[in-house]
Length: 341
Image 1 (cartoon, one colour):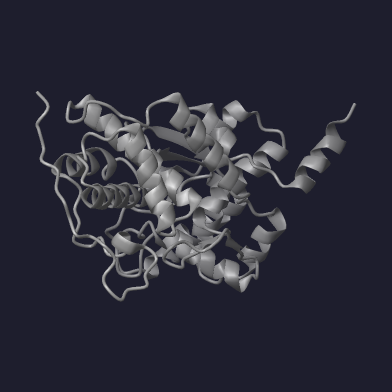
Image 2 (tube, rainbow, N blue to C red; image 1 turned 90 degrees about the horizontal axis):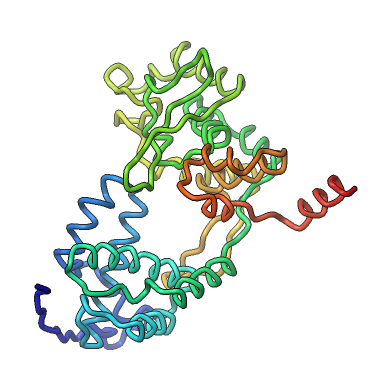
């Protein structure tokens, strides 16, 4: 039997005298998701998906709870109209179309779980109208996020630390997510075959997949593993991980993007994407995930069948792989000229 929950009215409004455009969403620090949502996040998202995915879904749940309190709605019984109102409310307070679309995706995943467990009776986002709208919105706002080979080489030229070269070349050659890269253990690497077994993130049941690397990356491994590069780190003797932090046995999953961004700035290949969000933040073109897009694009340009690319990226559905293949006009023109009869 579905538990009846009382609606709660809150005075979560913009503080008097505040000019923060985010209004009631400006400070969600004391807001917590409902216990049923926290259970989903802790048991099914946090251990199986990236820290960023966990953070985003938790943030979405907090934002939706703020909205429900402000509008006197039952969190667990939204209608399609309620979700439309939530989107409009987020837009009113300065959030970008991309952020709002992502929050609808996150809410849909949350309510899919809640309906499966009987906590909610329906997922109002689980219909063709919402799916089509989110698909159109996401496609329209997604930027082309790969870098050219020459840009990558300029970035590598700025690298002075052996660990950072292993990190950057690993992202470029393996097509892995940052969380997958920092989770690689030395025992996962078959140096004779030049391949690595990676545990695929962002799946309900993480599965291993094999990725491959070149002699350039092997030479980095020689410097890092065989010639003492790794030994200079504090936890080198007791850590099983390939990449270490300065004072930790495993590199934090946020560090690959921070390191890549620093070198991109030094190489003068960094750029900002889109418009600033409600908090004044703006996305960067060159990130760790940009390297994953670059992996997909350049292999496709060179002729790899998409079905092989899907397996290398660890996607469960080929439609996910297609989302990575957004080309610049000059690349499309060059391909047209190459393949003309």
